[in-house]
Length: 398
Image (cartoon, rainbow, N blue to C red; front, side, top):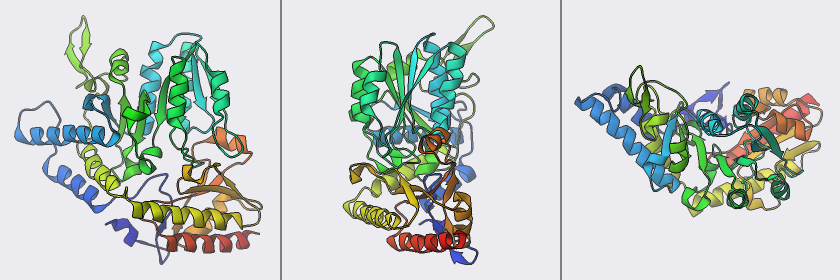
Protein backbone atom coordinates (compact mmCIF):
# COMPACT_ATOMS: atom_id res chain seq x y z
CA UNK A 1 0.00 0.00 0.00
CA UNK A 2 2.96 2.32 0.76
CA UNK A 3 5.67 1.51 -1.81
CA UNK A 4 8.42 3.39 0.05
CA UNK A 5 8.10 1.04 3.01
CA UNK A 6 9.62 -1.64 0.79
CA UNK A 7 12.88 0.29 0.59
CA UNK A 8 15.99 -0.57 2.58
CA UNK A 9 18.53 1.78 4.18
CA UNK A 10 22.13 0.59 4.51
CA UNK A 11 20.88 -2.96 3.98
CA UNK A 12 18.20 -2.72 6.68
CA UNK A 13 14.41 -2.40 6.26
CA UNK A 14 13.28 1.22 6.41
CA UNK A 15 11.64 2.27 9.67
CA UNK A 16 10.16 5.66 8.83
CA UNK A 17 9.54 7.73 11.96
CA UNK A 18 9.71 11.22 10.45
CA UNK A 19 5.99 11.43 9.72
CA UNK A 20 5.49 14.81 11.40
CA UNK A 21 7.79 16.28 8.74
CA UNK A 22 6.11 14.52 5.82
CA UNK A 23 4.06 11.36 5.50
CA UNK A 24 4.55 8.60 2.97
CA UNK A 25 2.06 8.25 0.13
CA UNK A 26 -0.26 5.29 -0.41
CA UNK A 27 -0.64 3.73 -3.85
CA UNK A 28 -4.05 5.36 -4.34
CA UNK A 29 -2.46 8.81 -4.11
CA UNK A 30 0.38 7.85 -6.45
CA UNK A 31 -2.15 6.46 -8.93
CA UNK A 32 -4.17 9.68 -8.88
CA UNK A 33 -1.03 11.75 -9.46
CA UNK A 34 -0.05 9.49 -12.37
CA UNK A 35 -3.56 9.68 -13.85
CA UNK A 36 -3.70 13.47 -13.70
CA UNK A 37 -0.15 13.88 -15.02
CA UNK A 38 -0.45 11.39 -17.86
CA UNK A 39 -4.04 11.98 -19.00
CA UNK A 40 -5.45 15.29 -17.77
CA UNK A 41 -2.81 17.99 -17.92
CA UNK A 42 -4.56 21.23 -18.82
CA UNK A 43 -5.13 24.62 -17.25
CA UNK A 44 -8.13 24.84 -14.98
CA UNK A 45 -11.35 26.86 -15.39
CA UNK A 46 -10.22 28.67 -18.56
CA UNK A 47 -10.32 26.48 -21.66
CA UNK A 48 -13.50 24.90 -23.07
CA UNK A 49 -11.94 21.69 -24.38
CA UNK A 50 -12.73 18.31 -22.79
CA UNK A 51 -9.37 17.71 -21.08
CA UNK A 52 -9.55 21.08 -19.35
CA UNK A 53 -13.11 20.33 -18.26
CA UNK A 54 -12.06 17.02 -16.72
CA UNK A 55 -9.08 18.62 -14.96
CA UNK A 56 -11.32 21.36 -13.60
CA UNK A 57 -13.91 18.89 -12.33
CA UNK A 58 -11.19 16.86 -10.59
CA UNK A 59 -9.93 20.04 -8.93
CA UNK A 60 -13.33 21.34 -7.85
CA UNK A 61 -14.61 17.94 -6.69
CA UNK A 62 -11.54 17.84 -4.47
CA UNK A 63 -12.61 21.15 -2.95
CA UNK A 64 -15.96 19.59 -2.09
CA UNK A 65 -14.24 16.52 -0.64
CA UNK A 66 -12.00 18.68 1.57
CA UNK A 67 -15.01 20.67 2.80
CA UNK A 68 -16.81 17.43 3.71
CA UNK A 69 -13.73 16.07 5.50
CA UNK A 70 -13.47 19.24 7.60
CA UNK A 71 -17.19 19.55 8.34
CA UNK A 72 -17.50 22.73 6.27
CA UNK A 73 -20.85 23.45 4.65
CA UNK A 74 -19.67 25.86 1.94
CA UNK A 75 -16.87 24.58 -0.36
CA UNK A 76 -16.12 28.20 -1.30
CA UNK A 77 -14.59 28.60 2.15
CA UNK A 78 -11.82 26.21 1.06
CA UNK A 79 -8.80 27.87 -0.57
CA UNK A 80 -6.14 25.67 -2.15
CA UNK A 81 -2.54 26.61 -1.38
CA UNK A 82 0.90 25.03 -1.75
CA UNK A 83 0.90 24.03 1.92
CA UNK A 84 0.33 25.27 5.45
CA UNK A 85 3.15 27.82 5.15
CA UNK A 86 1.49 29.40 2.12
CA UNK A 87 -1.88 29.36 3.89
CA UNK A 88 -0.55 30.97 7.08
CA UNK A 89 1.30 33.63 5.10
CA UNK A 90 -1.88 34.35 3.17
CA UNK A 91 -3.79 35.04 6.40
CA UNK A 92 -0.96 37.11 7.91
CA UNK A 93 -0.71 39.28 4.81
CA UNK A 94 -4.36 39.59 3.81
CA UNK A 95 -6.02 39.66 7.22
CA UNK A 96 -3.09 41.75 8.43
CA UNK A 97 -3.96 44.38 5.85
CA UNK A 98 -7.22 44.94 7.74
CA UNK A 99 -5.35 45.77 10.96
CA UNK A 100 -4.00 49.11 12.12
CA UNK A 101 -1.18 50.39 14.30
CA UNK A 102 -1.58 49.29 17.90
CA UNK A 103 -3.66 46.22 17.12
CA UNK A 104 -2.48 43.02 18.82
CA UNK A 105 -1.62 39.55 17.53
CA UNK A 106 -1.38 36.73 20.09
CA UNK A 107 0.91 33.83 19.13
CA UNK A 108 1.52 30.71 21.20
CA UNK A 109 5.04 29.90 22.33
CA UNK A 110 4.82 26.47 20.71
CA UNK A 111 4.28 27.66 17.14
CA UNK A 112 6.11 26.60 14.00
CA UNK A 113 8.11 29.41 12.40
CA UNK A 114 5.49 29.65 9.65
CA UNK A 115 2.97 30.87 12.23
CA UNK A 116 5.44 33.33 13.77
CA UNK A 117 7.59 34.92 11.08
CA UNK A 118 4.78 36.12 8.75
CA UNK A 119 3.16 37.90 11.69
CA UNK A 120 6.45 39.51 12.66
CA UNK A 121 6.80 40.77 9.08
CA UNK A 122 3.31 42.29 8.96
CA UNK A 123 3.68 43.64 12.52
CA UNK A 124 6.85 45.52 11.60
CA UNK A 125 5.20 46.97 8.51
CA UNK A 126 1.90 47.92 10.15
CA UNK A 127 2.98 48.76 13.69
CA UNK A 128 1.19 45.82 15.30
CA UNK A 129 1.99 44.44 18.76
CA UNK A 130 2.78 40.75 19.19
CA UNK A 131 1.95 39.05 22.47
CA UNK A 132 3.20 35.56 23.35
CA UNK A 133 0.98 32.92 24.96
CA UNK A 134 3.40 30.77 27.02
CA UNK A 135 3.47 27.04 27.67
CA UNK A 136 4.12 25.46 31.05
CA UNK A 137 6.82 22.90 31.84
CA UNK A 138 4.61 20.10 30.52
CA UNK A 139 4.23 21.96 27.23
CA UNK A 140 0.57 22.80 27.78
CA UNK A 141 -0.70 26.25 26.85
CA UNK A 142 -1.26 28.64 29.76
CA UNK A 143 -4.93 29.38 29.16
CA UNK A 144 -5.01 31.43 32.36
CA UNK A 145 -2.50 33.72 30.66
CA UNK A 146 -4.64 33.91 27.53
CA UNK A 147 -7.42 35.55 29.52
CA UNK A 148 -4.93 38.16 30.73
CA UNK A 149 -3.40 38.73 27.30
CA UNK A 150 -6.72 39.37 25.57
CA UNK A 151 -7.75 43.00 25.29
CA UNK A 152 -10.01 45.14 23.15
CA UNK A 153 -7.04 45.57 20.78
CA UNK A 154 -6.51 41.80 20.30
CA UNK A 155 -7.49 41.00 16.71
CA UNK A 156 -6.24 37.46 16.11
CA UNK A 157 -4.81 34.55 18.10
CA UNK A 158 -2.52 32.13 16.25
CA UNK A 159 -2.20 28.64 17.68
CA UNK A 160 -1.36 25.12 16.54
CA UNK A 161 -4.01 22.44 16.81
CA UNK A 162 -1.15 20.10 17.73
CA UNK A 163 2.44 21.22 18.29
CA UNK A 164 4.88 19.62 15.85
CA UNK A 165 7.42 19.43 18.69
CA UNK A 166 5.35 18.60 21.77
CA UNK A 167 2.65 16.44 20.21
CA UNK A 168 0.00 17.88 22.51
CA UNK A 169 -3.56 18.40 21.27
CA UNK A 170 -4.47 21.93 22.32
CA UNK A 171 -7.99 22.78 23.60
CA UNK A 172 -8.95 24.74 20.49
CA UNK A 173 -12.66 25.03 21.21
CA UNK A 174 -11.90 26.56 24.61
CA UNK A 175 -9.40 28.94 23.03
CA UNK A 176 -11.94 29.95 20.36
CA UNK A 177 -14.58 30.58 23.01
CA UNK A 178 -12.24 32.77 25.08
CA UNK A 179 -11.03 34.74 22.07
CA UNK A 180 -14.44 35.24 20.52
CA UNK A 181 -15.77 36.55 23.84
CA UNK A 182 -13.28 39.42 23.40
CA UNK A 183 -13.89 39.88 19.66
CA UNK A 184 -10.58 38.23 18.74
CA UNK A 185 -10.36 35.93 15.69
CA UNK A 186 -8.53 32.57 15.81
CA UNK A 187 -6.14 31.09 13.24
CA UNK A 188 -5.34 27.40 13.75
CA UNK A 189 -2.29 25.72 12.25
CA UNK A 190 -3.72 22.26 11.63
CA UNK A 191 -0.69 20.68 9.96
CA UNK A 192 -0.43 18.00 12.66
CA UNK A 193 -3.98 18.16 14.01
CA UNK A 194 -5.71 17.25 10.76
CA UNK A 195 -3.69 14.02 10.67
CA UNK A 196 -4.40 12.81 14.20
CA UNK A 197 -7.72 14.42 15.16
CA UNK A 198 -11.24 14.26 13.76
CA UNK A 199 -11.69 17.88 12.65
CA UNK A 200 -15.16 19.41 12.47
CA UNK A 201 -14.72 23.11 11.84
CA UNK A 202 -18.44 23.82 12.21
CA UNK A 203 -18.11 22.68 15.82
CA UNK A 204 -14.59 24.00 16.47
CA UNK A 205 -15.56 27.52 15.47
CA UNK A 206 -12.09 28.65 14.36
CA UNK A 207 -12.03 31.53 11.89
CA UNK A 208 -9.13 30.07 9.88
CA UNK A 209 -7.65 26.56 9.69
CA UNK A 210 -4.58 25.62 7.62
CA UNK A 211 -2.90 22.34 6.75
CA UNK A 212 -0.47 20.75 4.29
CA UNK A 213 -1.39 17.86 2.02
CA UNK A 214 2.02 16.20 2.25
CA UNK A 215 1.57 15.52 5.98
CA UNK A 216 -1.69 13.63 5.41
CA UNK A 217 -0.63 11.31 2.56
CA UNK A 218 -1.26 13.69 -0.39
CA UNK A 219 1.25 15.03 -2.92
CA UNK A 220 3.76 17.66 -1.80
CA UNK A 221 2.99 21.20 -2.90
CA UNK A 222 -0.65 20.89 -1.86
CA UNK A 223 -2.40 22.62 1.01
CA UNK A 224 -5.64 24.05 2.33
CA UNK A 225 -6.79 27.22 3.99
CA UNK A 226 -10.27 27.27 5.45
CA UNK A 227 -11.60 30.73 6.19
CA UNK A 228 -15.03 31.98 7.16
CA UNK A 229 -16.50 33.48 4.03
CA UNK A 230 -17.32 36.84 5.59
CA UNK A 231 -13.64 37.24 6.48
CA UNK A 232 -12.33 36.02 3.13
CA UNK A 233 -14.64 38.48 1.40
CA UNK A 234 -13.17 41.36 3.41
CA UNK A 235 -9.53 40.39 2.93
CA UNK A 236 -7.56 41.72 -0.06
CA UNK A 237 -5.87 39.23 -2.41
CA UNK A 238 -2.52 37.80 -1.39
CA UNK A 239 -1.18 37.60 -4.96
CA UNK A 240 -2.23 39.13 -8.26
CA UNK A 241 -2.31 37.54 -11.70
CA UNK A 242 -4.44 35.27 -13.78
CA UNK A 243 -7.49 33.41 -12.50
CA UNK A 244 -8.03 35.65 -9.45
CA UNK A 245 -9.54 38.53 -11.43
CA UNK A 246 -13.03 39.40 -12.59
CA UNK A 247 -11.89 42.06 -15.07
CA UNK A 248 -8.70 44.04 -15.76
CA UNK A 249 -8.32 47.47 -17.28
CA UNK A 250 -5.76 50.25 -17.01
CA UNK A 251 -8.23 52.13 -14.86
CA UNK A 252 -9.19 49.40 -12.39
CA UNK A 253 -9.02 45.67 -11.69
CA UNK A 254 -11.88 43.86 -10.01
CA UNK A 255 -11.32 40.53 -8.29
CA UNK A 256 -13.05 37.19 -8.60
CA UNK A 257 -15.17 35.95 -5.70
CA UNK A 258 -13.64 33.64 -3.10
CA UNK A 259 -12.00 31.21 -3.27
CA UNK A 260 -10.64 32.17 -6.71
CA UNK A 261 -9.57 35.58 -5.35
CA UNK A 262 -6.81 33.77 -3.44
CA UNK A 263 -5.82 31.24 -6.12
CA UNK A 264 -3.75 33.30 -8.53
CA UNK A 265 -1.93 31.66 -11.42
CA UNK A 266 -1.81 28.10 -12.65
CA UNK A 267 -2.77 25.83 -9.78
CA UNK A 268 -1.34 22.43 -8.89
CA UNK A 269 -3.22 20.58 -11.63
CA UNK A 270 -1.90 17.10 -10.83
CA UNK A 271 -1.22 17.47 -7.12
CA UNK A 272 -4.38 18.98 -5.66
CA UNK A 273 -6.66 16.10 -6.78
CA UNK A 274 -4.52 13.71 -4.71
CA UNK A 275 -6.06 15.29 -1.61
CA UNK A 276 -9.24 13.35 -2.32
CA UNK A 277 -7.80 9.79 -2.11
CA UNK A 278 -5.50 10.95 0.71
CA UNK A 279 -8.40 12.14 2.84
CA UNK A 280 -10.41 9.03 1.94
CA UNK A 281 -7.49 6.98 3.23
CA UNK A 282 -7.24 9.11 6.37
CA UNK A 283 -10.97 8.63 7.00
CA UNK A 284 -10.64 4.86 6.64
CA UNK A 285 -8.15 4.86 9.53
CA UNK A 286 -10.58 6.37 12.03
CA UNK A 287 -11.42 2.98 13.56
CA UNK A 288 -11.36 1.56 17.10
CA UNK A 289 -8.68 -0.91 16.00
CA UNK A 290 -6.39 1.83 14.75
CA UNK A 291 -7.00 3.89 17.87
CA UNK A 292 -6.06 0.92 20.04
CA UNK A 293 -2.87 0.35 18.03
CA UNK A 294 -1.90 4.01 18.39
CA UNK A 295 -2.55 3.93 22.14
CA UNK A 296 -0.41 0.80 22.49
CA UNK A 297 2.50 2.48 20.72
CA UNK A 298 2.09 5.67 22.79
CA UNK A 299 2.03 3.77 26.07
CA UNK A 300 5.06 1.69 25.11
CA UNK A 301 7.11 4.64 23.92
CA UNK A 302 6.26 6.80 26.94
CA UNK A 303 7.15 3.99 29.34
CA UNK A 304 10.41 3.01 27.64
CA UNK A 305 11.68 6.55 27.11
CA UNK A 306 11.05 7.33 30.78
CA UNK A 307 13.43 4.51 31.74
CA UNK A 308 16.44 5.93 29.86
CA UNK A 309 18.85 7.69 32.18
CA UNK A 310 19.45 11.32 31.24
CA UNK A 311 16.61 11.44 28.68
CA UNK A 312 14.24 14.40 28.89
CA UNK A 313 10.91 14.01 27.08
CA UNK A 314 9.17 17.22 26.04
CA UNK A 315 5.40 17.36 25.74
CA UNK A 316 3.89 15.45 28.66
CA UNK A 317 0.26 16.57 29.01
CA UNK A 318 -1.64 15.93 32.23
CA UNK A 319 -4.15 13.89 30.20
CA UNK A 320 -2.57 11.10 28.15
CA UNK A 321 -5.44 11.26 25.65
CA UNK A 322 -4.18 14.67 24.53
CA UNK A 323 -0.88 13.25 23.27
CA UNK A 324 -0.38 12.07 19.70
CA UNK A 325 2.30 9.42 18.92
CA UNK A 326 5.05 12.03 18.57
CA UNK A 327 8.03 12.06 20.92
CA UNK A 328 10.63 14.83 21.09
CA UNK A 329 13.46 14.47 23.56
CA UNK A 330 17.04 15.32 24.44
CA UNK A 331 19.60 12.97 25.98
CA UNK A 332 22.20 14.34 28.36
CA UNK A 333 25.74 13.88 27.11
CA UNK A 334 24.75 13.34 23.46
CA UNK A 335 23.96 15.57 20.51
CA UNK A 336 20.61 15.08 18.78
CA UNK A 337 22.15 15.03 15.31
CA UNK A 338 24.72 12.38 16.29
CA UNK A 339 21.90 10.19 17.56
CA UNK A 340 19.94 10.71 14.34
CA UNK A 341 22.94 9.78 12.19
CA UNK A 342 23.56 6.56 14.12
CA UNK A 343 19.88 5.61 13.98
CA UNK A 344 19.95 6.23 10.23
CA UNK A 345 22.69 3.60 9.89
CA UNK A 346 20.28 1.20 11.56
CA UNK A 347 17.54 1.99 9.03
CA UNK A 348 15.55 4.40 11.21
CA UNK A 349 14.52 7.81 9.85
CA UNK A 350 13.91 10.44 12.55
CA UNK A 351 14.12 14.22 12.77
CA UNK A 352 16.79 16.12 14.66
CA UNK A 353 17.26 19.84 15.23
CA UNK A 354 14.96 22.71 16.09
CA UNK A 355 11.96 21.48 14.08
CA UNK A 356 11.31 25.05 12.86
CA UNK A 357 10.44 26.06 16.43
CA UNK A 358 13.49 27.92 17.74
CA UNK A 359 11.59 29.99 20.34
CA UNK A 360 10.25 26.76 21.86
CA UNK A 361 13.79 25.33 22.00
CA UNK A 362 14.85 28.46 23.86
CA UNK A 363 11.89 28.02 26.25
CA UNK A 364 13.16 24.56 27.22
CA UNK A 365 16.84 25.50 27.19
CA UNK A 366 18.04 23.16 24.44
CA UNK A 367 19.75 23.69 21.09
CA UNK A 368 17.64 20.99 19.48
CA UNK A 369 15.80 17.72 20.02
CA UNK A 370 15.40 14.29 18.51
CA UNK A 371 11.86 13.52 17.30
CA UNK A 372 10.26 10.18 16.50
CA UNK A 373 6.79 10.57 15.03
CA UNK A 374 4.53 7.65 14.21
CA UNK A 375 1.89 7.17 11.52
CA UNK A 376 -0.80 4.46 11.18
CA UNK A 377 1.51 2.37 9.00
CA UNK A 378 4.04 2.12 11.84
CA UNK A 379 3.92 -0.89 14.15
CA UNK A 380 4.66 -1.76 17.76
CA UNK A 381 7.50 -3.94 16.47
CA UNK A 382 9.06 -0.85 14.88
CA UNK A 383 8.67 1.05 18.15
CA UNK A 384 10.49 -1.76 19.97
CA UNK A 385 13.25 -1.75 17.36
CA UNK A 386 13.58 2.01 17.72
CA UNK A 387 14.03 1.77 21.51
CA UNK A 388 16.58 -1.02 21.08
CA UNK A 389 18.57 1.03 18.57
CA UNK A 390 18.29 4.20 20.65
CA UNK A 391 19.92 2.42 23.59
CA UNK A 392 22.75 1.32 21.31
CA UNK A 393 23.21 4.82 19.90
CA UNK A 394 23.30 6.42 23.34
CA UNK A 395 25.85 3.88 24.60
CA UNK A 396 28.06 4.56 21.57
CA UNK A 397 28.10 8.30 22.31
CA UNK A 398 28.60 8.18 26.08
